[in-house]
Amino acid sequence: MFSLFYGLYKYLFSKTEFHVLILGIDKAGKTTLLEKLKSLYSNLEGLPPDRIVPTVGLNIGRIEASNSKLVFWDLGGQPGLRSIWEKYYEEAHAVIFVIDAACPSRFEDAKSALEKVLRHEDLQGAPLLVLANKQDLSEAVSSEELARYLDLKKLDERVYMFEAVSAFDGMGIKEGVEWLVEVMERSKRTETLRIRAGVNGPT
Ligand SMILES: Nc1nc2c(ncn2[C@@H]2O[C@H](COP(=O)(O)OP(=O)(O)OP(=O)(O)O)[C@@H](O)[C@H]2O)c(=O)[nH]1
Ligand SMILES: [Mg+2]
Image (tube, rainbow, N blue to C red; front, side, top):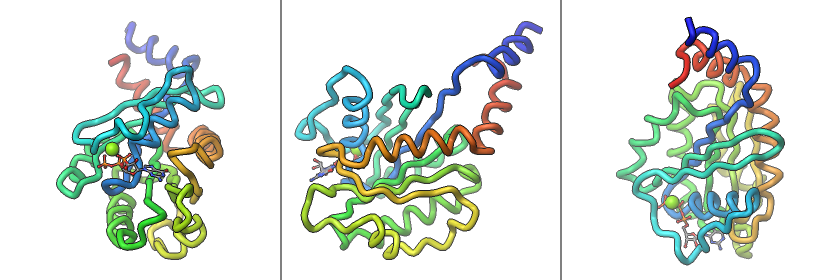
């Protein structure tokens, strides 16, 4: 009984905590982005880029943005680690997919990794933010060019946006996060996850 009321209370009054998965192939800049997010949205200094090593486990970052709580899950993108991604799909409200926009030789790899993510049924209806990262480098392509290159076919009904960013200097990151919060707040998937959490009670 308690758990029923607690679930109802939580459903009605608590601030939603959004879980955002940060995916992308190795060296795209996911962890650098996570550290930049922490320093942009909190008083904490994120790790400087030269202290960041390739990710093997899971990095977690929590921020508050646009009056919402966001929890980011940053996973390793090396080929042997990508099979772990799907374990996090069910609980994710949205996905950020990071691409190194200055490295066209890896666009094909990024495209097929992203297509596989989008095909997975556990991510149905999850809003998608594709980041064309490393815009501080002169050879980086724009977000429009990257979108043209990826030519994604599986986006039909999905809410998505491409954004040009630099995890080094922070360009475009706040715009992307603001968009993400707005669409997650309105998304049917958020409602589904909220009901499921309420039904299951406190964990
Ligand atoms: N110039 C530039 N370099 C970046 C940027 N973001 C990341 N890098 C560099 O790209 C390399 C990879 O960055 P990581 O953040 O470790 O990449 P990752 O996607 O987390 O890689 P995995 O953990 O192996 O999946 C590092 O040398 C970073 O310093 C950026 O915005 N601009
Ligand atoms: Mg990493």
